[in-house]
Image 1 (cartoon, rainbow, N blue to C red):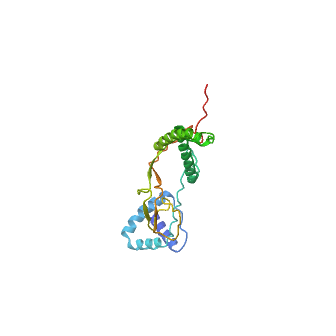
Image 2: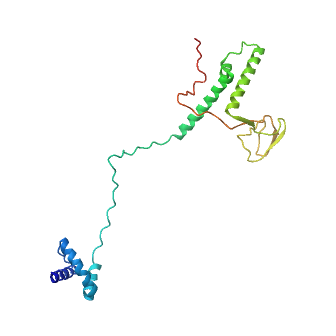
Image 3: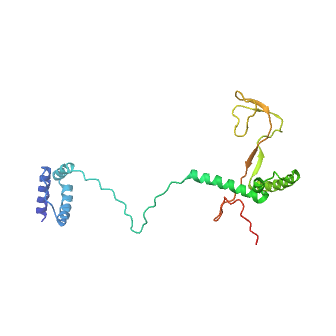
Amino acid sequence: MKAQMLALFSRAIHHYGGRVEPPTLSFVDRVILAYVAFFRILFDGSFASRVAFVKERLPELPAPAPLKPVRKSIDPPPKEEKPVDVAGIRARARTDGALWLLGALQREGRFVDFLEGDVSTFKDDDIGAAARVVHAGCKRAIEGALKVEPIREESEGAKVTLEEGFKSAENKLTGNVKGDAPFHGVLKHKGWRAKDVKLPTPTKGDEPTVLAPAEIEL
């Protein structure tokens, strides 16, 4: 058996080196051939050289195909993510915040009632009395929603200078406006800045457009 396997191995090397397709061997034959070839390559230099010669001419094995991920049948199909409408969210937040503040002014000071009422028939004393009530209530509403502070620290009537790069959103120029900064003028109004805004978080069932519910007495 050993002699036959050696002869078979030699013929295979000879034929493959001569570009002839070698015979197909069974699994058992391949095991025996590998065992015999190991020791002969180890102790037979000439035989080892012929094996190396054939090995250098063997074609490279193809790269293994990438494995495809297997999705389990129980996994739900991926959901299509919709883009977030950031601009719409910000617009709704601004609208809801403005409506909530207007509703607070109505609850505390009857602000909407005062504006929508016809005061042309009221006497000055009556309008003054109503204005004091509205003023006190609206002040409570503002103080509960945010903190306000003056933009300018100077007293009204003081002379001020606006250097180049001043914040136009915080300083309004009136009168004879010409040229570029610096500007020299008189402070007519300190201005106001809102700080520490504390608007409530909307809850389920809230309706920002309802500034004041209708009151029905039974």
